[in-house]
Amino acid sequence: MNSIRPHWSRPLRHLAMLVGISLLPVAMAHAEAARPILGVLKFQDETGALPFQGGIGRVLTNILTNELAARPSFTVVERRRLQAILEEQELGASGRLRAGDGARIGALTGAQYLVMGTVTAFEQGVQRTRSRGLLGGLGGSKESSTSYLAIDLRVVDTSTGEISQARSIEGRATRTSSSISLDAGVAGFGYEALHDEALAKVVRAAVIEAIDYLECTMVVRDACVAAYADKDRRRLDGTRKAIKLDGNTR
Image 1 (cartoon, one colour):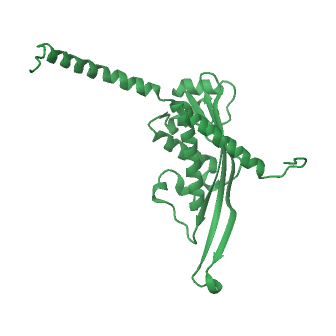
Image 2 (cartoon, rainbow, N blue to C red; image 1 turned 60 degrees about the vertical axis):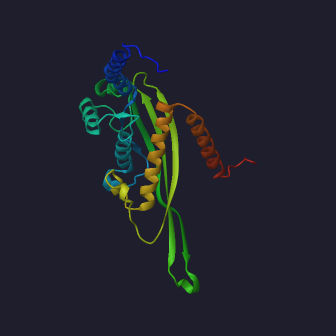
């Protein structure tokens, strides 16, 4: 026996569709508003690396800004606009904020958070190994070069002036070859200033790690927070084992 649908079911379906369509812009606007708005200040550089490119701090800032803007989880204040406001208002363009600067930058740019940091180490060839082929080098040789990068990342809440997120990121990348060639995916984001594959890779890895961390703690906020706490604990344990301190019997 076939069921008979009420004559008003089709109009109700049409009404539901219309209501859904009318609410779509509201939902999209809410999702847009939920995305944290970030401004990226120039990273301070304590290494003196890449002086002809304006320093590794400048290179890292440009790369981080572009990679953050490519993530759908964030809205990023356009770098030139942010720089123009910093210069016009004589604010902390160097990444060193004075009291009240964060709130002023936030009010002028709409940024809810300011991402900043310090490059504490950027070294090429911290570890080199060379292996030769058999019979006195017949068959060629292979050389490996490891580069090291360390950055201290901070995020300031412009509404309170307090640091809401902070993380130290250390990484190494190894190039094994006798020639240098950058990955095709590296060009166009500031990596062209890094004329060594290991240097480019370690910077890229550090930037991705920084953005993944920000996305976890500022947007996702689930079990990944505990995972990052565990990674940081292992990083600290590794650092402690790197040196034998006087008086330490362990």
